[in-house]
Length: 128
Image (cartoon, rainbow, N blue to C red; front, top):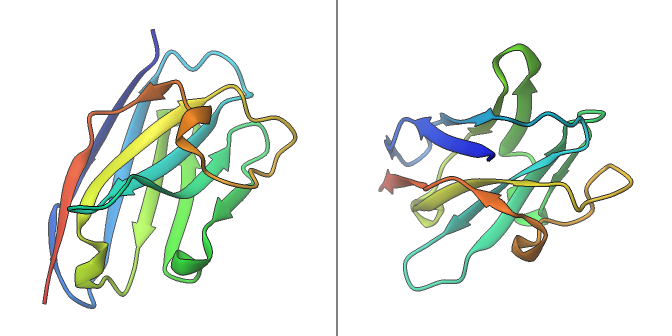
């Protein structure tokens, strides 16, 4: 059973930065894609970034390009999401998820239905 655990700083001021970690276990195939999602209060879950573990190719939705960086540490089986210039509207529960269904990297979207394994999520609050 694949397990994903998110961790990181959970409270930051507007304009600040933080890095979330997603520690993965039992990802025995190189063909996994790890995605980051977020769900703000009163809004639907939104896929924001993904990384293919086969070639480290990445994807970002337009609204976060230039502010977010997804990366991975192969030795630690951990995927990171660095977020810069944070805004109050970035306040959300952030989830990482794993998928074996995404072929032909780089990822071209981050769609929740493609992901079979999910972390429990971590609340990130950006204060104004």
